[in-house]
Image (cartoon, rainbow, N blue to C red; front, side):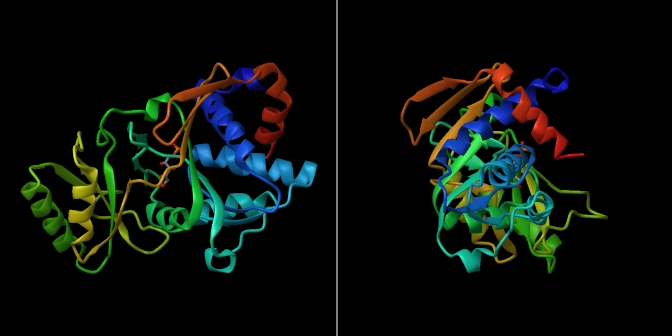
Length: 263
Ligand SMILES: O=C(CO)[C@H](O)[C@H](O)COP(=O)(O)O
């Protein structure tokens, strides 16, 4: 089964598998959103259902709630759990400071709320997400439905005054814009290169119709990059990279079991 898996998916599995080392019995966990986080959710379900791992969890989206509950993980509300021990999530980009662009899946608001309530945030990725400067991936901005077009104009004016005369587009298009779990729209900013993420984030958050941005600054504790050859490269804060190799042949049964969860 592993032979038919695209290399990118093996890398995501390796990253999620390595992140499982951070999970301890009894922890309160925040579960991320996206295709990499889905591997983590499946690994947690496997550990719970087959090895009796006990944990409590909240989710960062309806998508993750549905996946987790379908696999037998009980999802509680963040408010019921309170402070979390650990959150694990994917990212669209990360830079050398471990600052992130997130929200490619449209879940940035719940992700930021959940992850800001976690003692540690572990980001599971692959090498394609590593950049020198954030911004090649369009930066998502969550905007209220009320006055959304006027907010877009304010966003573009604020970008211009920061020297970023760049394109913005509505996720899903202007006639049927994407609606987030919180009932808002997503404006994607094509900045190409964000030199001052904090200044950009502050300028966006200063606009009343902007609810949140996909810039996650000073939030990630650790980054893990999984590779299709079985190598997990990981970095704590701004320290150096370390690596661990996983034997893919030895992981084949586990990968097959996780893939069967899709059936
Ligand atoms: O921020 C996110 C969702 O809002 C995801 O974590 C991000 O888009 C990465 O997703 P994937 O693991 O599928 O590449």
